[in-house]
Image (tube, rainbow, N blue to C red; front, side):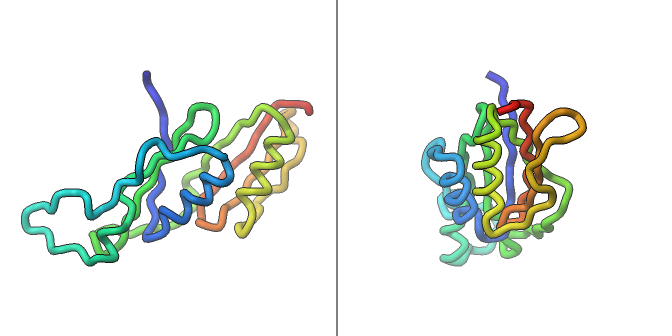
Length: 145
């Protein structure tokens, strides 16, 4: 079956971010967290530090509506540069306003609110925020209650 997932890269806080998302959505990982140290070393690659070996290579968490959130640690020590920006939002469309409010409150804890949940001109109930890990979320529901 075809599927769309959202993949998030963090410098060194993937596990903490996904534990947070796991608590928000009340779901469990799709299998164990894969660690960078479990991957075979490529020829010519410098050895990994013990700290880098324990970083997350891949994690998958179902969140809502069949959507899967995936993530990895991408530290500079293995050649990545992470730039937190405003070019990615994850859009959640819960079935009720109550669930929209719950998700908004949980995800915004420790983060910043861009727009409070409110009735919008297009007829839906909408809000947006950035969570404490720098990930941007939009929550929109057409439910009237």
